[in-house]
Length: 530
Image 1 (cartoon, one colour):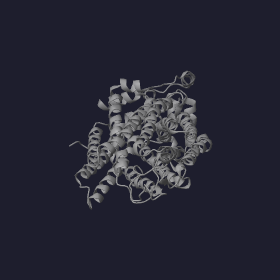
Image 2 (cartoon, rainbow, N blue to C red; image 1 turned 90 degrees about the horizontal axis):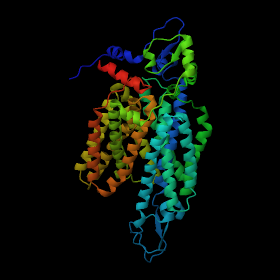
Image 3 (cartoon, rainbow, N blue to C red; image 1 turned 180 degrees about the vertical axis):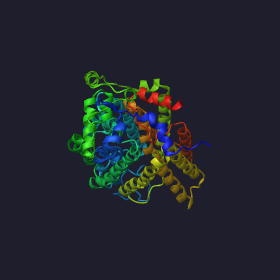
Image 4 (tube, rainbow, N blue to C red; image 1 turned 90 degrees about the vertical axis):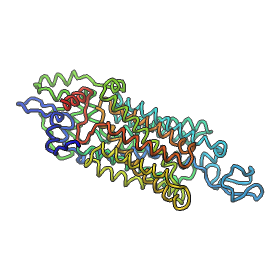
């Protein structure tokens, strides 16, 4: 049984990573961002709270563009207009005579009604969904790289929100199905970058002991967006007006929110913009009622291990500092990050198959579509709350394993339950508990993946993991449709258990610093092994 260490022993072990700097005369003293936040600026004060809330509003926009297909592509109710060739006892319109029935909300109520995406053409609805998630997969990789390089976190978030607004409004003008499918692909491309850019931008200025709870809280905004979308869809029953109504908030976000957001000081630092990074840290300290001493300056991980330099040398360094960049190639070259990326990709893929698969496979609530979406959104919030409360108590790794196995256990239990009588209710409960556990895992993986990689490649790695999740989202509907009623539960259970086993090989990141460079992270790993 492994020995446990006390809090003070943990602090002693972590002290080489905290980059403590000895004060020496009036010379500039270098601190990494985590140390500066803890000692001088505040880990989660007024500034971080305002920045976090404003940035996380983008998650509601992602929910709008992702979940709008539930309402826009639905197969609406129909009624008989003639007693000849039409029977109200029919379960669908496939066997009815043309002209003997009509859509209750008219042909403009959904894409399925307007373009006849029913019966032999019903596969086209699934095709559009797959294309959207395929676009998300591509966009996550592209904007993950761009936000780590010249565009930055704020710049990338601005671009994807503008593209979402443009593509969303153009979707409402689609003249036919294939134009609609293309525009949903493009919307997916831009939507794929929203969540990861907003998440990293919101959490990077937060101190290490507060980052976990803050990161977990971002997903409340996604669930809130889903709940709001059900109300918007109820007000705008036409699918074309719904796309416009769900796209305009992206325009408002760019105009009213983006100007008040700050670029990440970590991105400034690794790009060689030390003055800009220091200015952000001064604003954070002032807004939080703290004082940042004049003799304290920011440094990268490896720099804060070195002795302090004199003032003239530091001024010269400011003018000659070169930007540090990274890509997925750098992640793959390093044995440490290569193994972490492999685990993050596979676990995110398995988690996504279970989450989206259970959402499609669970027994529908006996209520209307709008209320069902609202209830599903609200049902995920307790999972977010529970994982946020337990995150800093038990750590990322044990919680990831526990939630994956919790979901996997109830999915396997659902495989053993019969599908008749009262057992239908038991199977429904198993599905709901499976979603509950996987919802906790899904948002935990964002904060976990963020902490596993240094700043120079963080968004690229997170984008790669997000791409894997989108591949799982594409696969999930086929698991549900092709494998019938019982086997999907077995597949989801196997995915959950397998994901939990793989999570055993991930390192714990609780209260560990967010490293800036690959060298800084590798040096810290070597120090821990010595």
